[in-house]
Amino acid sequence: MAEPSEAPPPPRRRILLRLFLEYVRISLCVVGGGYAIIVAADEAFGKRLKWLREGELLDRLPVFQMIPGLIAGNSAAYVGLKMAGVAGVAVAMSAVALPSFVVILAVARGYDWLPMENPWLQGAFLGLRAALAGIVAGTAVKTWPRVMRGVYPYVALAACLVLVLWFRVNAAWTLVGGMLCGIALELARPRRGGAATPPGEGRPWRGLWPGVLLAGACAAAAPAIFATFAKFGLLCFGGGNVLVPVYFDEFVGPEAPLLQLPADEFNNLLAITQMTPGPISVNAATFFGYRLQGVLGSFVATTGLLAPSFFLMVLALRSLEKWRANPLVKGLLRGVAPATVALMVVAAKIFAEMSVFKAPLSVGSGLPDVRLFALALAAFSGWALWAGRLRIMQLVLLCAALGALALRP
Image (cartoon, rainbow, N blue to C red):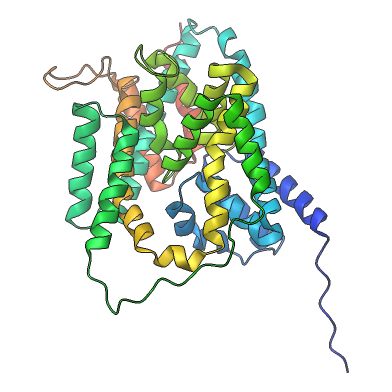
């Protein structure tokens, strides 16, 4: 008796359409950044559609973290490449970004109409900023045990904090310096057996030309915006909160090179990106791109932010074992991990200065003047995130409501 043959796979165009629709639904309905999107995608593609092994995306999380770019974008690239090649990568990443782009563009166009002098709205934004201070601090605490092992991470963490907070070095350079130090330490380690790194597949770049054309067109249309956000994408390790100090250096204050936003407005904008659907970094790129050059700036900024994920994930996944065994990659991860924790600490300080403390913190300024209500919100948010009691969306909405009630007229 002949064994029943397996059902033929669905047409490629049907896979691409389903991939697009699923990721649009996930990005539109999930708030909380890349990690939340990975959990939702694992349920959709692993448990429900059976395209992946259940839990596969969560098992691949270290791979998504070790490659520069957004965690949500990297995970979408993994699913897309596995199901439909490079076209699947483009479709999945576009679907992840599309809801964020549309929603944040609408918010950006209407932001100037908000009555910012209204006491209710001021209280809501104070609560939001306090929540973000606690959320970022809680994220750093959760990351700490996994990263801070041995002497080097503590030395690197202290060096990054001194450079950024004391010497006012651009936060992006601390990430680059951490990468270089980690690579140098890894290359200096003695190796057993001298085994060669296994070769990758031939021509890992094949099929990337449409992405190259799109990136080239965006770079030609707005070169400064594209270059800036592509740099952000290359420096994004460990989630969007790591980029907050980098955004601050580029967009806040009279000496900022691109935008000269007031600190209050910057923090309000970032608070909004935390409570809208989709990846937080894509939300921020769309918002700041609109402020720089309207709708075109939003599109170029979003494309630039996602470009590193697109190219590096395709190249890396086609030579995965080579990348995982490569000492350069190991050193890069070793060096950048404590730098990301340091930038989370700096981000928490930025949010706290605009909510918990009534003036910026500085050395020799004495004891800071504290808003006890905002301090309580920040402490509660940090604990709730660390303990897993509430999701980020629930936290920011709760703290916004409490802030509005506390400062009501």
